[in-house]
Amino acid sequence: MPPVLVHIVFTRLSMSKLNKICSGLNWLRSWVDRLLSWILISIVGIMTALVTYQVISRYVFNSPSAVSEVLSRYLFIWLVLLGASFVFGLREHMAITFVKEKLSFKVRTVVEIIIELITAVFAFTVMITGGYSSATRQMWQMDSALQIPMGVIYSVIPIAGGLILFYFVVNEAKLLSALFNHQTESKGES
Image (cartoon, rainbow, N blue to C red):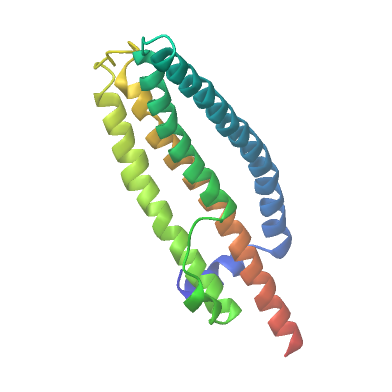
Protein backbone atom coordinates (compact mmCIF):
# COMPACT_ATOMS: atom_id res chain seq x y z
CA MET A 1 0.00 0.00 0.00
CA PRO A 2 1.61 3.31 -1.04
CA PRO A 3 2.29 5.77 1.80
CA VAL A 4 -0.24 8.28 0.39
CA LEU A 5 -3.00 5.65 0.50
CA VAL A 6 -2.00 4.69 4.04
CA HIS A 7 -2.20 8.36 5.06
CA ILE A 8 -5.68 8.66 3.50
CA VAL A 9 -6.87 5.57 5.40
CA PHE A 10 -5.46 6.94 8.65
CA THR A 11 -7.08 10.35 8.23
CA ARG A 12 -10.47 8.71 7.59
CA LEU A 13 -10.27 6.33 10.54
CA SER A 14 -9.83 7.62 14.02
CA MET A 15 -7.68 5.67 16.43
CA SER A 16 -10.65 4.58 18.52
CA LYS A 17 -12.53 3.27 15.46
CA LEU A 18 -9.49 1.34 14.32
CA ASN A 19 -9.06 -0.16 17.79
CA LYS A 20 -12.74 -1.14 17.90
CA ILE A 21 -12.46 -2.79 14.50
CA CYS A 22 -9.32 -4.67 15.57
CA SER A 23 -10.97 -5.74 18.82
CA GLY A 24 -14.04 -7.11 17.01
CA LEU A 25 -11.91 -8.87 14.42
CA ASN A 26 -9.72 -10.41 17.11
CA TRP A 27 -12.81 -11.73 18.92
CA LEU A 28 -14.11 -13.26 15.69
CA ARG A 29 -10.67 -14.59 14.85
CA SER A 30 -10.38 -16.38 18.19
CA TRP A 31 -13.62 -18.25 17.45
CA VAL A 32 -12.53 -19.11 13.91
CA ASP A 33 -9.12 -20.24 15.23
CA ARG A 34 -10.76 -22.44 17.84
CA LEU A 35 -13.18 -24.00 15.35
CA LEU A 36 -10.49 -24.53 12.73
CA SER A 37 -8.05 -26.07 15.21
CA TRP A 38 -10.73 -28.55 16.36
CA ILE A 39 -11.50 -29.44 12.75
CA LEU A 40 -7.81 -30.00 12.02
CA ILE A 41 -7.33 -32.08 15.18
CA SER A 42 -10.38 -34.16 14.26
CA ILE A 43 -9.07 -34.74 10.75
CA VAL A 44 -5.73 -35.95 12.11
CA GLY A 45 -7.51 -38.28 14.55
CA ILE A 46 -9.79 -39.69 11.86
CA MET A 47 -6.85 -40.15 9.50
CA THR A 48 -4.91 -41.99 12.21
CA ALA A 49 -7.82 -44.37 12.79
CA LEU A 50 -8.32 -44.91 9.04
CA VAL A 51 -4.66 -45.62 8.34
CA THR A 52 -4.45 -47.97 11.35
CA TYR A 53 -7.54 -49.80 10.10
CA GLN A 54 -6.03 -49.96 6.59
CA VAL A 55 -2.78 -51.47 7.87
CA ILE A 56 -4.58 -54.04 10.03
CA SER A 57 -7.01 -55.02 7.26
CA ARG A 58 -4.23 -55.29 4.70
CA TYR A 59 -1.57 -57.16 6.67
CA VAL A 60 -3.56 -59.07 9.28
CA PHE A 61 -6.73 -59.96 7.37
CA ASN A 62 -5.16 -59.77 3.88
CA SER A 63 -8.20 -57.76 2.69
CA PRO A 64 -7.34 -54.08 2.07
CA SER A 65 -10.10 -51.50 2.32
CA ALA A 66 -10.41 -49.14 -0.64
CA VAL A 67 -12.72 -46.79 1.28
CA SER A 68 -10.27 -46.10 4.11
CA GLU A 69 -7.41 -45.53 1.68
CA VAL A 70 -9.32 -43.04 -0.48
CA LEU A 71 -10.95 -41.28 2.48
CA SER A 72 -7.61 -40.81 4.24
CA ARG A 73 -6.16 -39.36 1.01
CA TYR A 74 -9.00 -36.84 0.70
CA LEU A 75 -8.82 -35.96 4.39
CA PHE A 76 -5.11 -35.30 3.94
CA ILE A 77 -5.92 -32.81 1.16
CA TRP A 78 -8.41 -31.06 3.44
CA LEU A 79 -5.85 -31.10 6.27
CA VAL A 80 -3.17 -29.47 4.13
CA LEU A 81 -5.37 -26.72 2.69
CA LEU A 82 -7.18 -25.87 5.94
CA GLY A 83 -3.90 -26.11 7.85
CA ALA A 84 -2.21 -23.77 5.39
CA SER A 85 -4.94 -21.17 5.84
CA PHE A 86 -4.72 -21.57 9.64
CA VAL A 87 -0.95 -21.09 9.60
CA PHE A 88 -1.36 -18.06 7.32
CA GLY A 89 -3.73 -16.60 9.89
CA LEU A 90 -1.22 -17.17 12.67
CA ARG A 91 1.46 -15.62 10.44
CA GLU A 92 3.72 -18.57 11.15
CA HIS A 93 4.20 -19.71 7.56
CA MET A 94 7.68 -20.16 6.18
CA ALA A 95 9.35 -16.90 5.29
CA ILE A 96 12.85 -15.68 4.59
CA THR A 97 13.06 -12.74 6.96
CA PHE A 98 16.73 -11.84 6.68
CA VAL A 99 16.18 -8.79 4.47
CA LYS A 100 12.91 -7.78 6.12
CA GLU A 101 14.52 -7.68 9.58
CA LYS A 102 17.06 -5.13 8.33
CA LEU A 103 14.33 -2.64 7.39
CA SER A 104 12.93 0.10 9.60
CA PHE A 105 9.63 -0.57 11.37
CA LYS A 106 7.60 1.56 8.96
CA VAL A 107 9.11 0.07 5.79
CA ARG A 108 8.91 -3.48 7.23
CA THR A 109 5.23 -3.01 8.06
CA VAL A 110 4.48 -1.67 4.56
CA VAL A 111 6.33 -4.65 3.04
CA GLU A 112 4.29 -7.02 5.22
CA ILE A 113 1.08 -5.29 4.10
CA ILE A 114 2.09 -5.72 0.44
CA ILE A 115 3.00 -9.40 0.97
CA GLU A 116 -0.35 -10.05 2.64
CA LEU A 117 -2.11 -8.25 -0.22
CA ILE A 118 -0.36 -10.39 -2.85
CA THR A 119 -1.38 -13.53 -0.95
CA ALA A 120 -4.98 -12.29 -0.74
CA VAL A 121 -5.07 -11.63 -4.49
CA PHE A 122 -3.82 -15.18 -5.10
CA ALA A 123 -6.37 -16.61 -2.65
CA PHE A 124 -9.21 -14.76 -4.34
CA THR A 125 -8.29 -15.33 -7.98
CA VAL A 126 -6.96 -18.89 -7.82
CA MET A 127 -8.48 -20.47 -4.74
CA ILE A 128 -11.89 -18.85 -4.48
CA THR A 129 -12.72 -18.09 -8.11
CA GLY A 130 -10.89 -21.03 -9.69
CA GLY A 131 -11.63 -23.42 -6.85
CA TYR A 132 -15.34 -22.63 -6.87
CA SER A 133 -15.46 -23.09 -10.63
CA SER A 134 -13.64 -26.40 -10.38
CA ALA A 135 -15.78 -27.66 -7.50
CA THR A 136 -19.05 -26.84 -9.24
CA ARG A 137 -17.90 -28.46 -12.50
CA GLN A 138 -17.02 -31.66 -10.63
CA MET A 139 -20.31 -32.03 -8.74
CA TRP A 140 -21.63 -34.46 -11.35
CA GLN A 141 -18.61 -36.79 -11.18
CA MET A 142 -18.83 -39.39 -8.41
CA ASP A 143 -15.85 -40.88 -6.60
CA SER A 144 -15.72 -44.61 -7.29
CA ALA A 145 -14.91 -45.72 -3.74
CA LEU A 146 -16.88 -43.25 -1.61
CA GLN A 147 -19.78 -42.54 -3.98
CA ILE A 148 -19.74 -38.82 -3.21
CA PRO A 149 -19.40 -36.02 -5.78
CA MET A 150 -15.80 -35.00 -6.47
CA GLY A 151 -16.95 -31.39 -6.13
CA VAL A 152 -17.40 -31.99 -2.40
CA ILE A 153 -13.75 -32.91 -2.17
CA TYR A 154 -12.70 -29.92 -4.28
CA SER A 155 -14.85 -27.57 -2.20
CA VAL A 156 -12.04 -27.25 0.31
CA ILE A 157 -10.15 -25.05 -2.16
CA PRO A 158 -12.58 -22.08 -2.05
CA ILE A 159 -13.18 -22.69 1.68
CA ALA A 160 -9.45 -22.39 2.37
CA GLY A 161 -9.30 -19.34 0.09
CA GLY A 162 -12.12 -17.72 2.06
CA LEU A 163 -10.30 -18.41 5.31
CA ILE A 164 -7.14 -16.85 3.91
CA LEU A 165 -9.12 -13.75 2.92
CA PHE A 166 -10.64 -13.58 6.40
CA TYR A 167 -7.21 -13.82 8.00
CA PHE A 168 -5.93 -11.25 5.50
CA VAL A 169 -8.51 -8.72 6.73
CA VAL A 170 -7.62 -9.43 10.36
CA ASN A 171 -3.87 -9.24 9.73
CA GLU A 172 -4.18 -6.06 7.64
CA ALA A 173 -6.19 -4.35 10.37
CA LYS A 174 -3.53 -5.32 12.90
CA LEU A 175 -0.69 -4.13 10.64
CA LEU A 176 -2.44 -0.85 9.86
CA SER A 177 -3.12 -0.32 13.55
CA ALA A 178 0.53 -0.96 14.39
CA LEU A 179 1.65 1.39 11.63
CA PHE A 180 -0.81 4.06 12.75
CA ASN A 181 0.24 3.72 16.40
CA HIS A 182 3.90 3.94 15.42
CA GLN A 183 3.29 7.08 13.32
CA THR A 184 1.32 8.67 16.15
CA GLU A 185 4.13 7.90 18.61
CA SER A 186 6.74 9.27 16.18
CA LYS A 187 4.80 12.55 15.79
CA GLY A 188 4.46 12.81 19.59
CA GLU A 189 8.23 12.49 20.05
CA SER A 190 9.10 15.20 17.49
